[in-house]
Length: 219
Image (tube, rainbow, N blue to C red; front, side, top):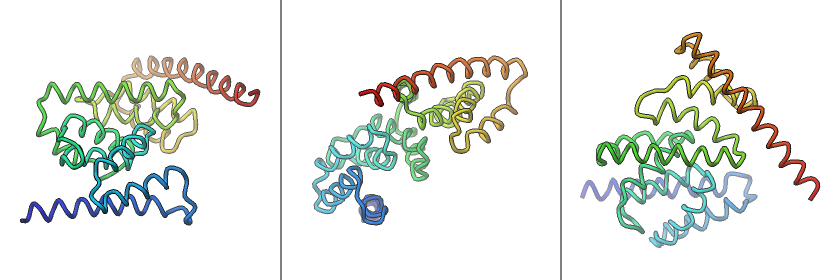
């Protein structure tokens, strides 16, 4: 009975997230907000499989609360069969999106999944973020930097430093602070090497952003 009650609390907590997200912007609902509102209705009526289809759409669009909710349902097997690996994938991404509740979920899932499969999921998360960056996502730059400190099996300060350096050059929130903290863990040789890598990527990234902007303005 206690386990059942705890599960109900989790479901209600997720419904609260949906409701808060849906009505937070002075009742002016964006398309994303409207989808969350619809998902809320599905959750309340226990039409979990229909809610999941919405979570998947929003999760793939880097909506981090949707990623967390999707991870939860894959773990609990509501509206879908239990899929711990899929749950961990979305839990990692929501963790990198600063959803604090994802930390506990990640820790629970890692204990349930073989180490080799956990490593495979880590690789899939990295590929996802790299693809997002390739498509022009600036927020994914910070997430990839945090990936090397929070998701990788062992902290990789040089790689994290590179991405935080790029984020700082783009003026992203907290990037400069994270860059400087990572720098404290590096040798002078590593700092110079990663600065060169960051500079090369930054110039290519900005050039591509400008080209895309010009194409949109001319269309």
